[in-house]
Image 1: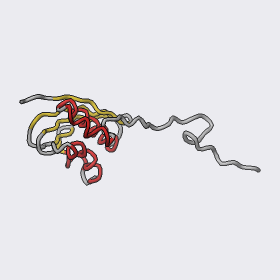
Image 2: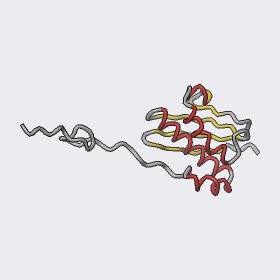
Image 3: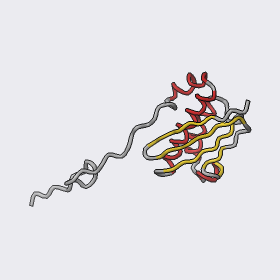
Image 4: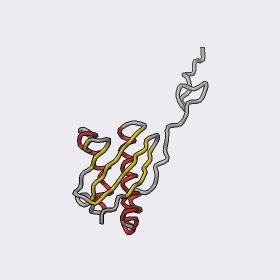
Length: 130
């Protein structure tokens, strides 16, 4: 069975395009391995690999992904979302494993826009009585 499954993951302004194929457990992101791409961020690497560990597919599938937009943390969460969706397309019964952990929900939190007369989105200038 040499099926190639595609899914898209999103988080903030980041997008991850994920292709999942049966294999040996290689994770390639933007042409480099996951360890090279994320450097020393072990907690973020664990977050990216969470859907594979929950479904026990960390050594059964290969992942080739490309990410764009935002920073490395948002891209990593988009990659996690994309891997989760690809696993559900790959095997339908993985949905019942991933859904309770919230891995199939797109995290819709984004930065609030700055308003005029304010220093940031809500922070007002310091009040001066005199």
